[in-house]
Image (cartoon, rainbow over all chains, first blue to last red; front, side):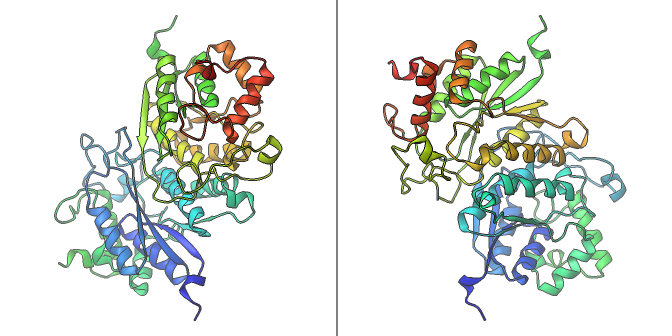
Length: 229
Length: 229
């Protein structure tokens, strides 16, 4: 077995939710030495970041946090004056961009991950974006990741030197059910993850994120271990 | 004359240096209601941001600051253990990427500006990148801005809605001399700007940024007002 230091390195954006946790375990299973990157951008609750730290620890990966305050509001995820939509069906979710959209969030996350990856000498950035069972965010679509790949090639030292950092989106065309099934096979500790947009003691069960998660576990035919406690 | 509120809005990335100050005045002259965006990313000195605030004030534009700490080093601009290269000729500068390169910096700046622009309803992001008299940074090349334009189109609400925010690089193919001549015609207060990579009481005159600036003023046949005091 090769020594751990010889494995290629990857930066994995970790939010604390189900998708990014699965992505971390996929990257690890592919043989990457993973560095989790957590972004504290002023989320309305702390549970997400606490979950991300626990998931990274369970995966045995170092976790780096970037803190920034976006001095503008406008999203239900960063601005308490904007309500989180509750009780929407998946058909309703598919119809438009919801109030939980944070302008240019994944562009910002990828730019931080790109800088971190270049500093570490990592060859990949993994992000758990998902196009099928998603909440209508434009920055979860495949075309966005193709565009960002070109940015990584044109805007960095590694790109100029012909060894551009690749953006990996292993979940992009999977359903939530497929993601959960794959995660179970990889031993993802779903009990540690947090998907709810609200920061209550327990998941609300009514926001888009809770509903997509519940649908995924239901269709996968397994109980959500985060709800077992 | 139209009321000030009717003018289209633009976000202008303002660093405190000569190029971004000129860019702000160009955007203003084109009829945009400008919002300056300053990024405090842990620069080794404060002079740049102080200069940016003064320039925004002189232009009559509101200035918004985003603070973040990149928890990785590796650049002479953010890490005091890395030396700023001094005394290089422009031929030497053209030969590679210098130690002042900050991984993915302009990608990060543009992603912040993109999110801010979308929140404000602005139609443009201006950045003072310059490809001719530059220090070898990959994220100052036209191909990078073309790639980021696609990101702005694919990764945001406005892009999906067919009114993507445009990235404007009015200086990209100008020489430093041409930039300075244009700036003088527009009344850019160059006395307020700060280009030096070091944070001394006065510009060092030896870093790449000081040398490119001095060459520009020399070839434009005007004295640098920042050195007059």
